[in-house]
Image 1 (cartoon, rainbow, N blue to C red):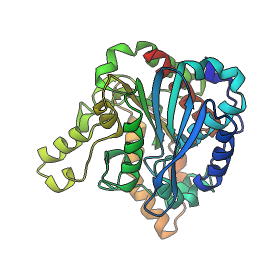
Image 2 (spheres, rainbow, N blue to C red; image 1 turned 30 degrees about the vertical axis):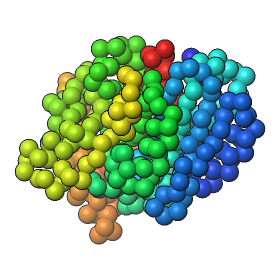
Image 3 (cartoon, rainbow, N blue to C red; image 1 turned 120 degrees about the vertical axis):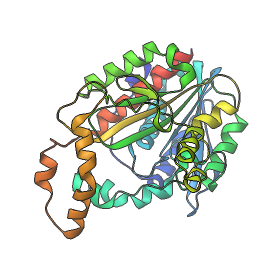
Image 4 (cartoon, one colour; image 1 turned 60 degrees about the vertical axis):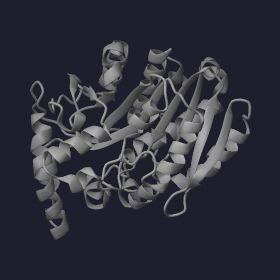
Length: 344
């Protein structure tokens, strides 16, 4: 397990602008295996960068930050680059076998709008008060290839280096009773080792798997406890059209997984889904009982917070606890390695 050589014990949430100079300086010190390229600017003028790491024949694209309130993915990719180059001697075989095309943050504007709760981490009340997430039509994950300026910049760079053997979009969940990994439907039967490794990584972090059979709703088809197929814009559009909602259907472009597969080859595409806050309580096969009860109560809890009410007792009923950043980054890192091993 090569990426175990990367220390994540001091992982913390950082912000796009403050890390860019670090990334630029570190990459410039390793020109034989790393290069940083400015891909364009976000809607609010923040720099979007792509980083090539490694020089091997197997190619992987790694993206993070599509959803504004999911900061673990960007921190994981920043750590991979910074710590990986810092200890490059220990990761030499990885850099010789793979070339990673990394966009550490595809949505820096969204990250900035979530600064209030990220700086207050791990306060769940701050998250409930200040978390911001884009609605359909603004969702960066479902706007490929170019429905937003950020998508156009990223997709152009990905296309120029295609095709890929692996594509991963690192995501998260505000609240969940466990971890999930979404796997592209054409690879479900080829990823037994990935599923076993992800299950073990979650267990070592004290996490169970989120077991929820949504029966294909919006394209999420059940594989096994903790595993479903990756989301697709095509399935989202079909879902809303089947409910007579053409307006919402039109808001969905393709996902990054669909876009990367359109570039050729047969890439393994995966989406990580790790909770920021863990809901504890009863569950049964296919039905996360406590999580669904908490989810149904969330609108009332948010209204209570708007009124200035104390919600500590309501949160305590669900045994709410946070997943430490270091543990979340460790799972993300292990999942990247499992994906690389699978395509090799």
